Figure (tube, rainbow, N blue to C red):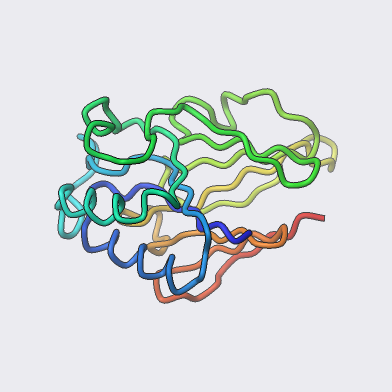
Length: 186
């Protein structure tokens, strides 16, 4: 199964449209959203084409294909307008014998870990910065931390980006479709 992973749309109709187009071009079967879908939040400037109602319309049109976790900008009113669950704090996916703990990242992150076993993956959004890093001590990797970056408000000079997961390979891509980082699970 091919899964597109994206985070932090923040109500940008312009970047949501690009994301949905890329989702379709990539031929992904599921879209995993890591929160902060409609609202821009008080710490962020308004993203380009801030039009949450258009974002609602675009995402509801593919609601059967979306998995989502709650970001720090989601509210109960968001669930009233979106046709897919957006209020789950986390979800757990399995890649063979590895657990992938998926959450937005504002509560559970490398500084506040969930229960992870050696080789598990922590997948967050929230920081708006793409990452793939192994954490551990003494040269041993205990877990892998991943972040797709942000759809609409990238930070630290990162591109507008998303990730693909297919055949145990994670690929980070910019919105021109260029792969710029990859991680293969062994």
